[in-house]
Length: 145
Image 1 (cartoon, rainbow, N blue to C red):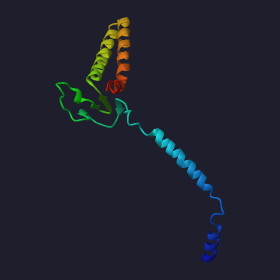
Image 2 (cartoon, rainbow, N blue to C red; image 1 turned 45 degrees about the horizontal axis):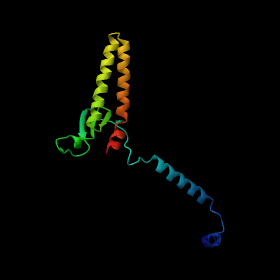
Image 3 (spheres, one colour; image 1 turned 135 degrees about the horizontal axis):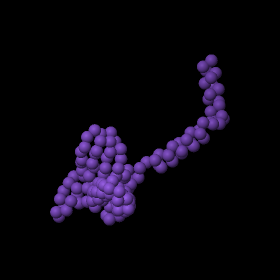
């Protein structure tokens, strides 16, 4: 019985169309497309704010720090972990933007509490512009060199 099955198998090789081969080829091409699109680019980072599991408040440099001509240029980027939030600061300029954003939100809150809504609205607008500039900090740093 086994010999008959082997003889039939040997005789049918190349004569029967392999229907699965076309589907496997298409699936492999689709997988390669999805893998290429979903792979993060080496020039684009994941962003300066991300979520992660961490309990505590700490910070760390992602590069070794060396003082260059008295500047803090080698100190960046710096990652700050606040509970489940990771904030990456790219430069002194970016740190200043985040500080001014925090100060603007605080000032706007106090102005709205004191019923000074016009001044609070102006500060809200300014804080929104600081947030927009902070969101583009990575692109600005990359363009500056």
